[in-house]
Length: 219
Ligand code: CA
Image (tube, rainbow, N blue to C red; front, side, top):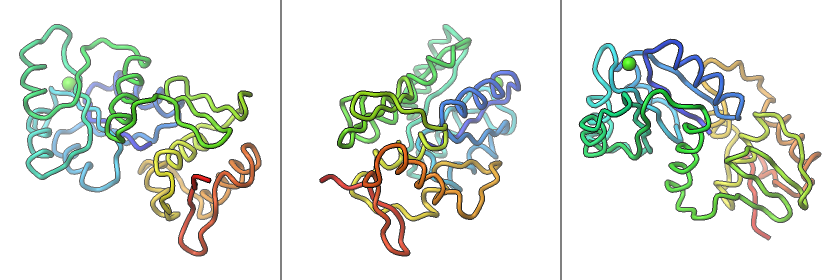
């Protein structure tokens, strides 16, 4: 899942980016309001995390411009704890949720999972396919009830496939959704991850569609 992070505080930004990447999110981090606004138009983000006090233009302006441009990506706004006015204005401007500072990574993760779940129209937090189950809260994957160890990137790919069942995903789409701008992507990276998923979860977990991409199909 690709996350856009717009936050000018170095400590918070660093912590969020590193923490979310460990969980298998691909994070692009911008510290300036103009760059942050532009970034959303340039890559397929599942969700955005937006600070309000930013250099360039403030977060509310960014949010207003996104919504005026028809962008519907869920946005989690970061506010100073107890700043009720900011929250109300944020929600009225089109924020989907807010979180007061200081917050824990767990809180951010829980909010992001809820926003992604809602955006995909799901009610159950668990994502399943046959005997495979993935819990976005714990980031744990199981096969027939037994936990399977996957790398953060394999988890990201599995989550993407689970959220897009019965749709063909091109290699390019997959790369754009599980890597950030700063990641070095080997030309065969997606094939390698697919190979590992099949080895760990069964060869039928995903089907290769000739020259087009990959699909996870309901049986
Ligand atoms: Ca700030």
